[in-house]
Amino acid sequence: MFLVSFRDGTGWHKIEDLRGRTYGRWLVESYDSVDKHGKVYWTCVCSCSNHTRREVRASHLRNGGSLSCGCLRVETARKTIFHARKYNWKIRKQ
Image (tube, rainbow, N blue to C red; front, side, top):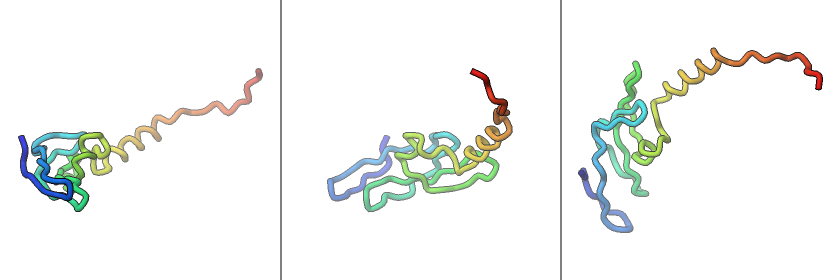
């Protein structure tokens, strides 16, 4: 299903309706805009406790370029630091 059509220098284009879909932690809420290069932006809400609302490019949603508002990166970093390998600094004989 298509939401709207827009025209740029190459002709008319249809925008696929992404409302209600989830990509990573983003829930697509509504259509936002098309920039001068024809890139489509959607208003999304993150499912974390902050409920961050942000305009995200459609291609970044589809290809995994944007998975969350940044909360996922923080959680992953915390887990990585907490479970960091303890190195054995002894010199090995060969």
